[in-house]
Length: 485
Image (tube, rainbow, N blue to C red):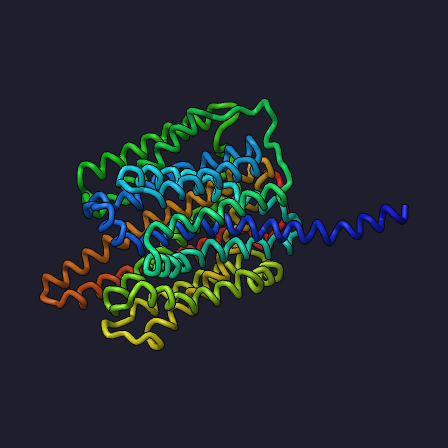
């Protein structure tokens, strides 16, 4: 008896260490996906020159990835619930890694665009099930809060690391290496996940995949993403944009009808009756819109108004990333354990709104320390505090067998919020810039005026998300284990 107890005591630290190692490997896989959304942007001019892309065709290097990534998040999450999160995660890593090899070796436009679409599919699957794997690995509230903090930092901070890495690899080697660098990472993540992650066999065999629901929602999301990413180019009032968005809404209505009638729905609609889940997803849409305002519009301000190089832009984001890391990895978890998820979420979003308002006041001849750094610090602080409780809220109250689905839903909310938010903000900025040019302002002054409007609206989005969280999130809910609806 004493020997058995001693063996169990010796095994506990080993299991604990194994869990945290598994988290690091999962986060490395997610980082590879997150990096890929921004690392490509820096290399686009080189890709255009090398493969003789036209300006309109070049957009598809980004759009092909966005379409499949946005379209397959919900389906990827549900496949994890049905066939096992580990198995589906590994399949996603394989698809993404093989597609990265194809991208790196691409010598034609068609091959690069096709490989980017497969990359998006693999990325969607990895993103959709990674959260549920973490939730299943960490069931203790304190450990879960810490683990979600690490995951949150990777998601929030990975984008700006991508800008730096993209500049380094493209400048020192060639654009091919922004894709080829994924190969050793993908192989390592696969091997370590097989060794560290416990096998999970998914739902019972009697549960069938809702094919009609999967086809309708995937098509709806892909049409919506396509309509949004092409909205600025084609015009928001154009027949093409209106038809695409109308078709997406029609397919989404078909999806909701299917879900209300089938025995094993892809998305049980009862999920959205869970108050924290519904609130976190709506707040997530607004928050993603605000984050995209920060990340993309401030990068444009730094490059086009202040004349920074891509490398300088990456370095300008570094203070925000360091603060985000400090809060996400340690302090945010302590705040959640002390105050629950409601107040840290609201406070973080309000601080981020303040950071966006700082950017809204940045002038044409802006100084880094006076006009850029304060906004970066506030946004890093706000994101570091808010991201963890938002993810916890979105995953709380959900049954273990629906964890992959809830993960796919919150990732879809971020994706659609970011895409729609950026489209709205870019349109507002362009309209304001056009008005200023017509009034006789110089191009740089007109550009800056447009960006300032976008920052103000982004701050409003963050403020609205803070208000939603403060009013509707259930008080006292922390990083609790799964509870049944």
